[in-house]
Image (cartoon, rainbow, N blue to C red):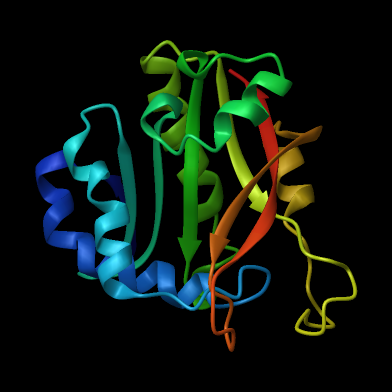
Length: 195
């Protein structure tokens, strides 16, 4: 079967919420997120992407099966935790389009879908008149016991796309790690690209 990538119209998103939630849980379970996800929480988290005309959901399908997706939203529609990190970088939320997540099943990596996901999101940001595109990435210690020996960070890919990590601009998010009893906060680095 052939792979197709397209942005979903807002009215299409509700029909795909369960599949997107399952995909997020599966992909973010791996290093470095180690996320012990919950389907009900995921569906609540994703609902705003069906409700905002300026949000974006890009989906990759093999036939009718969802194998990857990327989301984005105006920064002011996303988490308040970013306010301090953005202010520290000298940016106002209405200038920024937030690339929330990009998740892709391992068998489909290395086929250019990551680039396609960024292309769609950056095009939407430009169409909305945003000056910056940004995302956050979890920061894990290099000696973390669950870090795979063959792990290759995505930093080179992100830099190739024109993103740069903003030193000192961090935020924190809480989730429950695999095997943990409670949620704990993780530091998240801020990456920016001028559009």
